[in-house]
Length: 367
Image (cartoon, rainbow, N blue to C red):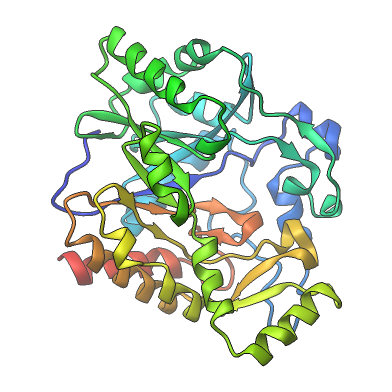
């Protein structure tokens, strides 16, 4: 699937953590999935929208092909052009949560563009379960043995798939924490040599996820483009507040152990940075919401008062910026990160509100 450069191409992060696996059964109890935390979440302050309950798709199981078809249909309705499936490769062939994507490749369904992202980080107890928010227990370690070739061939069939998203003929591959890899330049060089050797194409289009301050460092390591993390940007809204308000929030967060609350409206003013995002190798991010409290409880940071209308304004601002660029790739964070309150799928409060908001913003700016 070749990216058309005359209009935006929106790729949404896709989380596969919605089916039971033996490891989660062992760590958390039989049947644990992301839904476990989502369903038991509770409001932490007046007006806090929790729990967030899925509507149209319900508490789905990603082992069910019909669910994956329905997700693709909703994504098309929103104007999303493809999914970036996160995969977890811990080294020496050890994977977790690989079943949904592998079935997408093997079955040929849904007929919806995709690419891969490598979520290269160790899992700690606090990542997946709110009951372990203060635990530093490592569940599984991210390692970097010399298995670069094994990793590549595990996904070669996907790279050959006609649905795989390409930019200028190069298959897109994201790496979540490029600066944690001990020799990421070697990894990039090796994979580029392998994809050429197999006759798929000349090289990959590597995208690294990084902070604004490490863009140049990341590009120098061989990446074609970067996506910057949104958190440091929306937290600028907190840092620019009146010192009295900041002091009050500091006390409530550190002494009273209450979550950090940041206005979505204010935070999104910082999400499109023209000095950074206008560069051709920087891919901007659309960000519908953030509420990590199902996993982090009172240690969470939460964007408050996100609505479809506010999201639509954020989308319009970003799309207008992208319209001036040749590289019109956009990342949507995320399609279905329910445990982080970071999703587009319909819920009981807003229904398809966020889906319709993105669709309307696209029509306003590009049609």
